[in-house]
Length: 220
Image 1 (tube, rainbow, N blue to C red):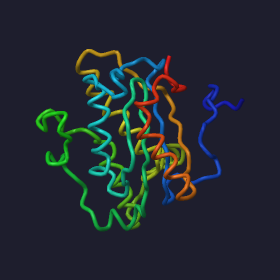
Image 2 (cartoon, rainbow, N blue to C red; image 1 turned 180 degrees about the vertical axis):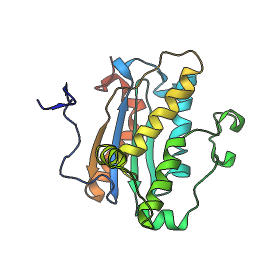
Image 3 (cartoon, helix red, strand yellow; image 1 turned 60 degrees about the vertical axis):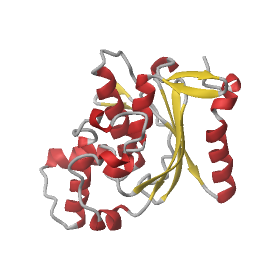
Image 4 (cartoon, rainbow, N blue to C red; image 1 turned 90 degrees about the vertical axis):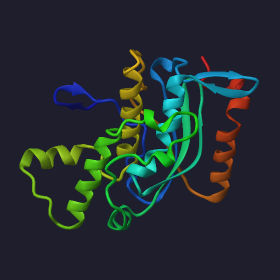
């Protein structure tokens, strides 16, 4: 196993040959740390969200407000994980046509939670990433050697990793305000969706997930 800065690196579960800022559809699964049932419980084959589960649900639907090149498809919050399909479009064209959001649009907040509970600073990292993308697009980025090195090993702006990192951070930040010990699993799982047949199969799997909880591989 290779080392980075004298530490062992955990091999990535993602396709090393694929550029995750490419246009495409991605099936994403993120688990809670230790697969704890932090998001709620299944009752009568339906998901009943806990307060943290509502955060996970709400903040997912905020993603396009802060990553305008991301479009959301099927999504579900389960007791200890979430499944979702994210479509990534052309980041440069989208950023060229969309202004960087200064705060959340309360109109987009799902009904489960009051819009006033949404923090303005959520997804602060993604705003900076969008500004960075504009600088790169316009040829304005000038950085020192250290900045360039960090950029080369950090999740690229517009990549799936940068979206998921910001989402996980937003949920964790709000959960911790409730004195919660909530944690996500360090990594996430993704699958590149290659055709319509696969898309519909995965979308149906996501939508049916609560009903099939008893046979779910993530069920403790």
